Image (cartoon, rainbow, N blue to C red; front, top):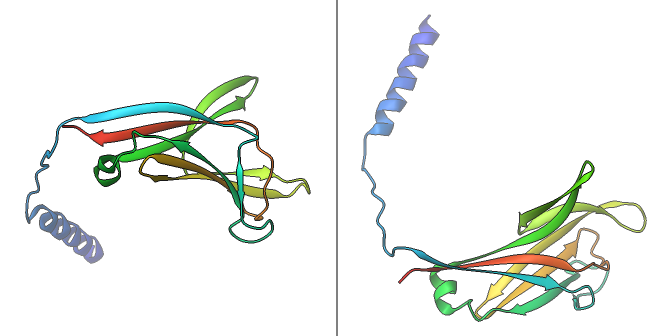
Amino acid sequence: MKKFLLSFFAFASVLFMSSCGDVYKTEIVKEGVDLFTDYVTAAADSWTYFGNEGELGCLIYQDFEFPEISNKVMDEGLVTVYFCAREQEGNDFVDRDHPLPYVFTVENERHQVISQNIRYAVERGFLRVIVEWSDSKTYLQDDMQFKVCIMSPGK
C-alpha cells in the first residue's frame, strides 16, 4: 500500500510540475509555402563511379540540375527526395514512394544479402542521387525514378 501511495504521489508531482512553467506560442513568421515537385529518371547508363571497388566510400551517383534550389531554399526551405518503386504485393504490383535515405537488402552475385543505400545531397542549383552498397562494390542498376519536392517559404 505504501508503494502505491508513494507511486501515486510521485506521478501527481510530475503531472503538477509539468503544467507549471512558461507557455509557448507558435509564431508564424511567413505564411504559406511555395512547393515545386518534379520527377527525374536516373538512367541505367548514366551513373558516375566514385572510389575504388572493395574500399570504403565506393559508390555511384548522378547529378540533376534544379534551378529551383535557390539560396532561399538552401537557407530557409527544404528539399526532400523519394525513390519511386514498383513493388510486388501478392499477385499485384503497387507503386510506392520511399523517402530518402532508403536502405534495403539485395542479393549480390555470390548470393550474399547486402544492404543498398540510396541517398541524396543538394547544393544550390543541383541535386545528387547517390547509391552505395554495404560490401563497397558497385552493381549495375536499372533506370530509377525519383520524386523531388522543393519547398520554399512564402512571401
